[in-house]
Length: 207
View 1 (cartoon, one colour):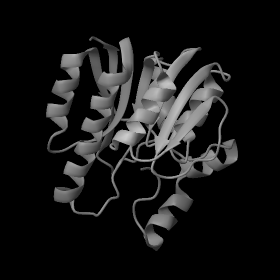
View 2 (cartoon, one colour):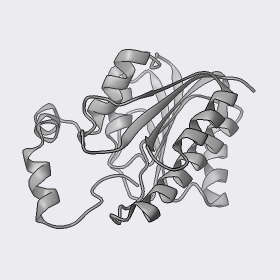
View 3 (cartoon, helix red, strand yellow):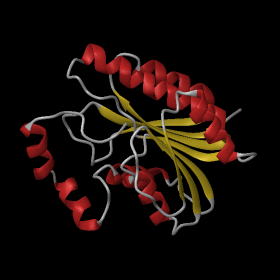
C-alpha cells in the first residue's frame, strides 16, 4: 500500500528531480519515505532497543529498514503489505491484506503472548485524483490502523500514522486522543509542500 500512486511522465519527472529521492538512492534507502520517519523520530524519539514494532503498509520497506538500522538490529519488526518486500534483518514479513481474518490470525500467531511497543503506518490508497473518493479511502486506512493498534499495543505503547488533512481527519485525531495520553500532528520536512499529508504521533496507549 505504498509507492507510486500515479502514472505518467509528470510523476516520474518529479521523482527524478526530488532531492529526497536522490538522497535515498545515494544513502542506500529503499524509498524517500525513510526521511519522514527519521524526522518524526528526531522530534519524538519513540525508537528504542529491544522493542517490538508492527509496520503496516511496509513495502518497499524503508521504514522497517530505518528502524532496524537505527536500533542496530536490536528490534523485532513484523511488517505487512499487499505487495512483496525484500528481506531485511530483524523483520518478519506477512504478505497479505491485514483487513482479512487470515492475515490477522497470522499476525497474532507471530506475536504470541507479546504485545507491540509501536505500530506505524505509512499506508495510503491508490490516488485517483478525486478528493471526494481519495479522502474517505485514506481515512478508512487510518481507522483500520488505529483499530489494529488498540488490539496489539501494550500499555504506554505508541502509534504513528499517515493522515491526509480533510474530511474525517479532525474526528480521527479526537478519537486517538481518547486512547492515548498525548497526540501530536506534524508535517515532516520530507513531506511535499503540495501534499495534504501529515503524520499523527500518539504516545502512551491507555487500555
